[in-house]
Image (tube, rainbow, N blue to C red; front, side):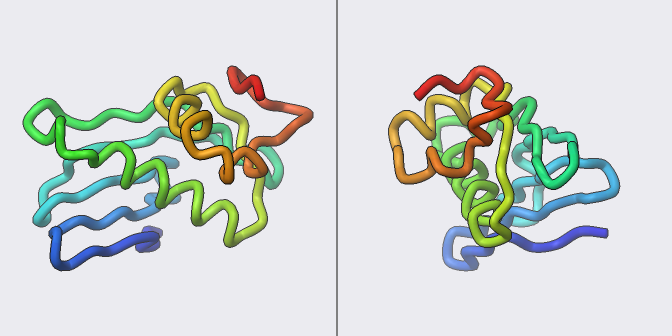
Length: 111
């Protein structure tokens, strides 16, 4: 099952949660441009690795993917364990997302 988390038709960007394969997918004009792998532990999401394909890099797409994921976790009132350096950097730059990190299982996150 997939669920659309974010869509910006003007920019041709969409982020979906592919729950079967446990990854978030980023599409640009219908082409898969990036992924974020995750695991589920209880009600917590363990965010493992974010990658944007080479031909799509330099457009800020990783920020769109990460923000869509964190916004969805906030909306669902779920916590995350961070093992992805890109997500870690994103949260350090936007401290309003720090509350998403599970304090008892932060991963590489350090406040």
